[in-house]
Image (cartoon, rainbow, N blue to C red):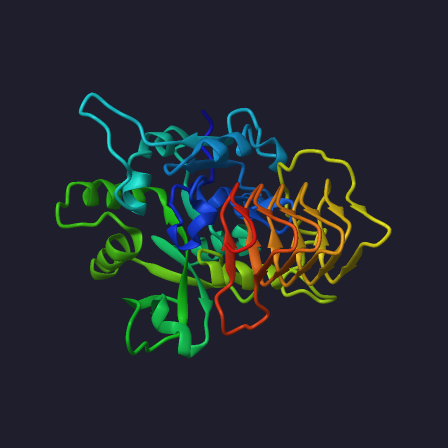
Length: 381
């Protein structure tokens, strides 16, 4: 097999428990987002738009729907002979089998896959954030610095810095300090969980970490601190565009709302770097004679008979007559029946709000209402 310059390993096995009912039946990267997309679409699209043609997707928690959705990778132009997408779930060996114990452990279990391509560089990604990045620019930074490891970073507000892994770098971008969620940060450069490793360094670091019984086998907790302590060449690559982790209900709702408006913070309509999806072909959406839609995204297959304001209505969702949906997200197949009123809520796939039910509140001090997949909400519930 011809040697690849750079391959990607996409960590997509997380349970996503902070998304509560939305991930009770499917993995977080498979959760619907933005009307016709799933969370993993954004990272896969970045790979395709960056010319990264070999992507290993490491799955674990409730993987069936994610496997089915990704398929051959054709939707992202990643169904390439000798390259393309490979699904990499945990597996058993003669010594037995076990779940991945950490982010580094997941990659370690798939070193044979990496070695089979023998790339010069390995890009490590997660499948739970919304952003656009040309990974070729990050790879350029890595090469120019002759780095062992380059870490994607995002300047965050100083008041939020203690929530992230924080890196301090000198004037050349070389990392001088790494702190995991420091109480008193001396930098506001937050790790995005995006890493480019030189091949030999990655293999050696993972094989050494695998036999360390005191390690939690995690990139942030173990691999990066040890590399820094060992004097390896670690550099940062700063990203100044939009980036948000959608791993909590609050961030999921907030980021969904960022897709709306005449000048959205994240533009789904950017043709230069399109977001691709394996969304099935559905009929056009239908807006009835009394239907009203304002400042919203409405996917194919939807039927809008009532009023929708500042909301995202995903594929095959339905809003009944005299129903009102505002500041909300309806995932695929969700139904709001006649006369119901849904405010600042997230309805899971195929969830139903019965006639006349009021759900959620416009009060932003209250938590976003969440209805799980296939759940029916009647009066008094």
